[in-house]
Length: 451
Image (cartoon, rainbow, N blue to C red):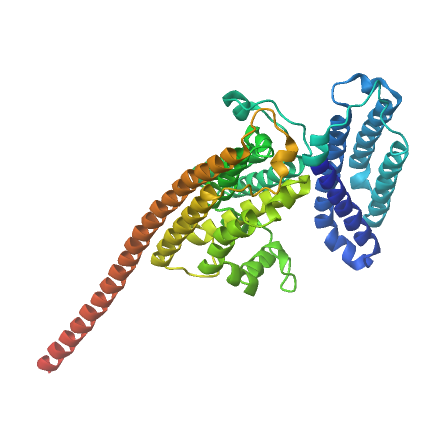
């Protein structure tokens, strides 16, 4: 519910801001900016409706509350919103830009007005309400004891993470479709790799693994490894930046940079060059382990829903950055030699092993009392849970790094083979030029002898 509410507020802000900016823009610029603002407004308004429905569903679900006064108001809001969208789509092409912007502001005002009226009411509750201390603390209720089937098949949707993954998937699919429409082929293997990476991220944030990662250090560490090591490799090998560079629109004239130009500028900016340095990537990837788990930061982040989201975001971002530098096939502002990549991977493996051993050797809990506060009935030995999590993290962390090592060696061999072919071509060109020179000298000698 919290995640979907965040998306609801952010997309509503984008929608309102883009339309108001278009309204106050000089008329000579409105027509130029209208097409792009329309795309922002369309996607934002769709997200507002979907997240609004998700919030309503979180409150009411399949209960009889839909037939109360509050449920009737929510249903009325959904129906009126859809009705307004249908009217807007019908009159869209018959209005001028200025009139259409004014109409859209009216649409937003109507929807916000309905929401304002709705906020004056609260759901009608029947009976006594049992206070869920765990839900207040973590954001979700305590699950049953973990079993293999529950870990694999339970699903507790994390609205913010799920929305971000759906958005990323939509962008990737749109890029692949755009290439196909102009006759270019995008490797199927890269698309499959992206799908695997997104699925793993969803499983580690909203699936059974993501659910139990809130309540057990073992499952937290498994989710950590998936988010920071396994899923990022799959995402990086899908070459999303390359796809974006091939499909994003360029500026309509020389004075306009365009989205593609802004991406290129960001890739070659000074901050990008700093964080893509192998040492920087390694420090963020492995150094943050000690900063997180051996300081009070871990317990502070775990004891709140947003803290857990921030931690997961860091795991994903650090993993994507590190493996982009090491095995990435996308453009990189730094040309890192393969030998340096191998050294960095070996260093990462050593640091990760040292971290895991230090955590396994610890005889005190690092959670600051967080897991004890949860009072789990199905796992009471917290120190054993912590040591098991450290051992699992060590075992799982080595495998992706070994895979990255193998991939780096393969890329190294292929790079050397390509360089050898280029050298052969240069050698053949030089030889051909030398033979042509000798032939020219021979012709000159023959002509002088004839004279």
